[in-house]
Amino acid sequence: MKYDINKELTRGAKRTLNDFKTMMFTLLSEKSFEEITVGELCKRANYPRATFYNYFEDKFDLLNYCWLWLTKEIHLEEYQCLPHDETLHIFFDRIYDFSKENRKKIHSVFTHNSEIGYMFSSFRNFMNSQMRNIFRTCSDAEKSIVPREVLADHYSNTLLLIWQWCNLKNQDCTKEQGYEYLKCLVGNM
Image (cartoon, rainbow, N blue to C red; front, side, top):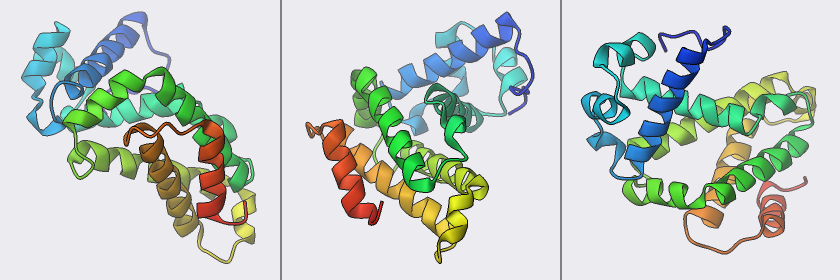
């Protein structure tokens, strides 16, 4: 990303980033990621292309920013030092609540973007990398005979599998049922 989002953002930068993020999600709810162009993003967001390129390299960079925004929205960074079973539980809890609050939008996005397309693959890879980062700082993971990266990918993939089942497959799954599924699939939580 061209713009340093780790520094204090101006109101203008916050607004611009929010507008591009919002427009990306709007367009994803109308068509597949592969069909979206930077020109269309800019036109629909009412920004010149030059402004887009001040912030992002390309539409892939913007999509990564959307995933970063999501991790901030669910406060992923807040539980990096917890035991990994607790981390998974809290992660599921927050992503479940976020999904319930945004159910129509999420369903629309995944209606136009298949599970084998770039957008979902990008989301899965991003979440795996976030879970790996959490496990790198988690002292509890040192006790496991399984390498941290494998454990992180397993937890992340299991969480995403249950999230898909609860939200994308139109299953009426409660949060408590989701926890039970996690316990069964992850093992000795």
